[in-house]
Length: 329
Length: 292
Image 1 (cartoon, each protein chain N blue to C red):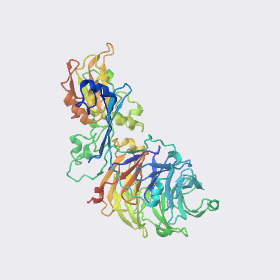
Image 2 (tube, rainbow over the protein chains, first blue to last red):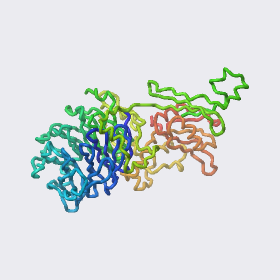
Image 3 (cartoon, helix red, strand yellow):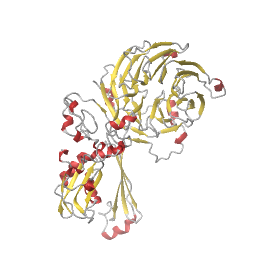
Image 4 (cartoon, rainbow over the protein chains, first blue to last red):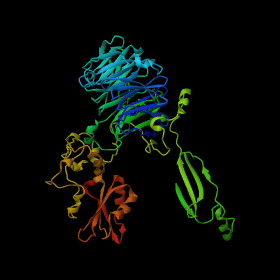
């Protein structure tokens, strides 16, 4: 396949997300402007200007009209996708990291980092449909959950918005009740990750999710019971994970930490996104090309293409060749 | 795109005209031809025009049309396609190369089944790496400390432990000038093992010391540009060096050419060894004899 290279960001990529229809790709990077691209040919549609710090993650509403982004400038912003205007800003006391819209796009979960004595926290906020003055009243959090030590790298909604799943630096996955804020389950320390969890990706139907960690492995968990289903082992710390909505494939992306790059192989374009069979946990293959560790991965909802974003600031959009769909192990 | 100057009358007419008449109709240009996309997707457009000097030129544009993907868009998606650009994309000119299609074909590389050949790579193109991982743990490199990858003499990070090239002060018989350094010389902190991160950029270029070719029996007035011109047809050349006698300013008869790719270096050696250049027969070989 011929990947399409998109160099819209000057700094490393942090997050990639497709909209529900699969025609737009949103990229967040450490430069302060998230960008939206057309997912078929990689043409840039626009950028969202307004943040003052690295943008760590984003999420799009189901009708692709609203974009929420979390940034290191201690705010999370809601944008109008079409025009690029910021509609609302949630202010926090520490950098915001992970954002996720709930089903229905009425509420969103935003995590904040530990900062200057504050512990990390998970905030649930109301999102109003119209950008009118009512937004100003609803800036307060519905619920704030505290507890995990260390940074929470990703927090997503569980099935039917009843639960919130969080994963972070303390290597444990936690499931919280979204109404009461009680901690319902914690992943087992023995079988869980041994190093910070960097990424989390839900399956298309939400019944299972995948976590990637710096301990060079990724693990597949059941959402309701938090039972460990599968483990995928690689040679490099995993920075990003995603699952194919079409086939039973799992993609892991990673690479050495930026500071350790001097001691590794210098071959250009060596960093690859590794494909594994979800059930057999065997490696299917790798797609090379990035010049730096891969920090973000996203699969198009139609399962026919995927995008990877790296430390090198490039987004590589891959449309699969027909023989990808016939791969047999 | 190729531009050919055609000073004769156009091909379409020569058979019908006598010599004299051909000159009068010079101001007419043949029509533009479009040779449609063939099975490889290659489309050729042949146009004729007059360039600034009044010569008739033929311009052939060859483009390859390739369908990357089918986009099946929902109604909303089709609407979104016509949204105006915003943010930084507003002033985007057509020439901005933000989105490019990769020139390389990237495949989903299947992992090696045990028993199959290891992929040839730039650094590990030697039999040592292909010997398999059996005794590999015993391979320790003293320079970079890595185990199982390469021996000290094949260290791609050679310059972590040695000072920078000392060509100028080495006598011509020291064949390892390109590949090695001297022990006991002062190594600045930035060049010792575990160098700072900025070195990676230059390290990538330095690595092709393995692809270094030594050229001897050069004539007196051979210089770097000459060697570059001579070796350029074989592939990308990252560095050329000609040893010059400081007192007389003439070449000392030898030089080094570093290729980016080892295969190009190999072809250059095969083709140019024994080649007559400026009345002398060149001797072209690998710079370090162990490079094979």
